[in-house]
Image (cartoon, rainbow, N blue to C red; front, top):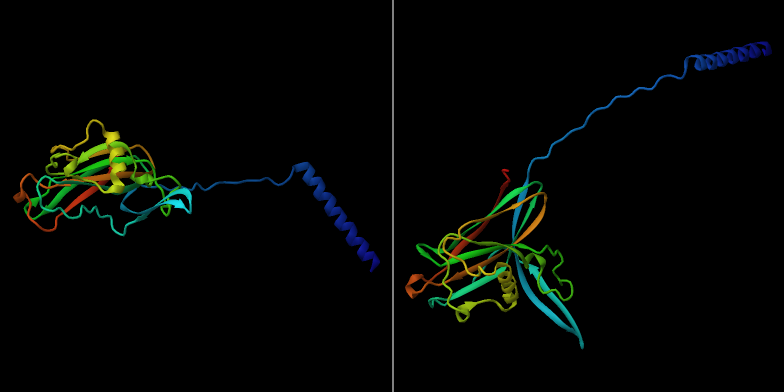
Length: 251
């Protein structure tokens, strides 16, 4: 038995020694590899969302300490509501709490167009006014302290007036209705547009180009009024439309 064990140990030692000799003489086993290339492509894509914000309230004091916080909220529907015109001629209104958000992964052209407030064959003089916005505030309740308006409502760069149909006639501030909380926005827009402060009949379509991927907000005002005569407009409900269309940039 001992002789068998000794014989086995001698054989194993010899095999191990032979392996070492072969490894040292011929080198270690070679290494090899190859690769699989992985690929995909992403198409050009963009989306448009229409929004409206509603002013709620402003807190000016916390007990006896001045403390300015303004509260806004998202409306359920992106409706630009001019409310009721009395029917008197030459009365104008402005609304400026609507905006669009465009998201794109490529360069695109953005086109603004609009239809006037219409009831059958009766049309109210209507124009719209487009701007790039200052930015996007996602937290509206409340806004950062001392900030009156969400950034998406603050005009940054004038794009211009647009919309089919005739422009309202300017009949002075006495005939121009602006909601109290929107005066500042209108003045900011006017400052960006100076000296072109009132639309013309031929301001129909406006466009601008976005040069690359990103999220872009656009502020849109509306200006509407009654005609010079009472009979220019039938009583009843009127409806119009603002449209933002995006398309891939051609060159």
